Image (cartoon, rainbow, N blue to C red; front, side):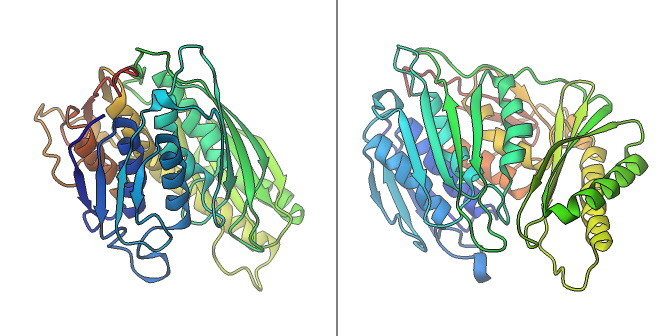
Length: 390
């Protein structure tokens, strides 16, 4: 296990929650002692300041798995220390259950614990079952639908396969409701590595758009009609298919996801959990508003010309850093065409993409210093972490 203390300041960059998740995930995996000060220090108002329930759930889960020494693991804590005593290969409990203290995002908890569990192979090929109770449709977070339709299919390019099942939904809108999702994870065999991803060098044409809507029954048909109209205007050559149509059972719960598929097998997602006032708005008004927003935002995402959408890009950084070989997954045409060949400085958030992406690169570089990033994050030379040597 590593002994170098990694110290991070939560005021660096703006992806405060991302900093905590990535740092603790890699600290548990590598054994590097970790201290974070000023946790989420750039956050102000209702969302600002210290650990949230989802961070606490991640930390406790990884602390239990590694018998870690932990201080500051409580909601609102502004500092955290984490020192793992056991490595992933020492994992005994292969039926893990995580219950957050509130409607915390299942996706964000999953994101934090997956890297550790991937390296917990026991030589017998025993799978790990992970059940997370929390939110599937939550403000300021991606949904179970996005995880199922975009993130996990994309991780298959790294050789990572995860079975998943939505047991029931959890909402932050309307009456708070705790949901549950179950995952089946097959860890790497001892001595194996996450493979270099098979990522296309070109995006290709948009051929199909999968549509998921979770709204009250009275809104389903009008929203379908509005979405088909807007998709036809903007993506006229793409076939639209409704893959999820569920009843949210409350007028405050309205969610839509569009996933664009390309001829090169890439996926781009854009969604919206409706968060505006709906009083005095007709069904047609709501349907048009939701349809126009998700279609327009997907159009903006696709027009960037990258090989990954904004949200997926930050989710993949950890896996790029852990994998063997070289990966090139740029988020814009400008990043694709950059060929400077220079090595990036990693002492602060850097490179192409959102603040979550740039923060994830910076944190991964502090905990995996053998990783090299080039051309503003366009190219990643991964650590090729061996499951025997974590």
